[in-house]
Image (cartoon, rainbow, N blue to C red; front, side, top):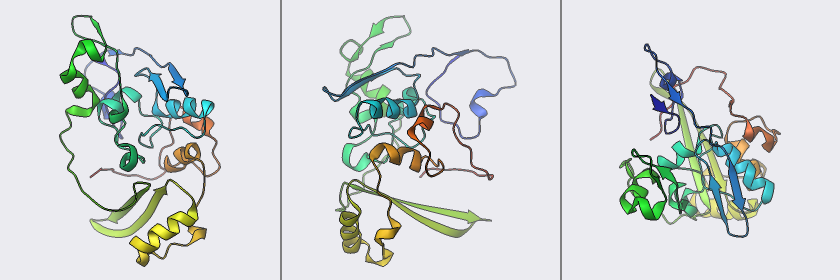
Length: 230
């Protein structure tokens, strides 16, 4: 028997088996957003897309730092750390988890005080042990992606994308100072609200509304691919 939540699987192998098995699907999906208190309670079965949508219903100026895969479950994302576009300024998703309620093997219901600091640390990505630190003097408002695609082991194309928390004119000044060789132009930039950027970086078609974030079936690339994060 497995509990649904906590896995990350591009190719669908985590729910296939040569043997019969049971998935315990708790379907705990409610989300309660408190804008005044700058906090939210998120049940582990909710997707991060549903979390973004719930925040946007209350405020287009608020956000939560997560990755750009709306179909991923919040429980698995937070317990794995949660790298996302806002990491330079706000850290991992797990860094912003201030309380948790869970049940242990004996059936006891625990919050962060009763579970103890070791367990609270561990359920917020503590088991990964795969991160190092790189220092740079770039603005914390700027995140840069470089994606290299290859065929037969030979790089064939590199794509540059960036997310900047500010106006295009401000970004141009930062890029001119730090990366003048990129020759970034204002017409290369798209200004949008934070919540509009979530479906944009999630590979939805341009013009897709934030309603798509509630879909639990996410778009699939129309080409064969293998993916590895480094």
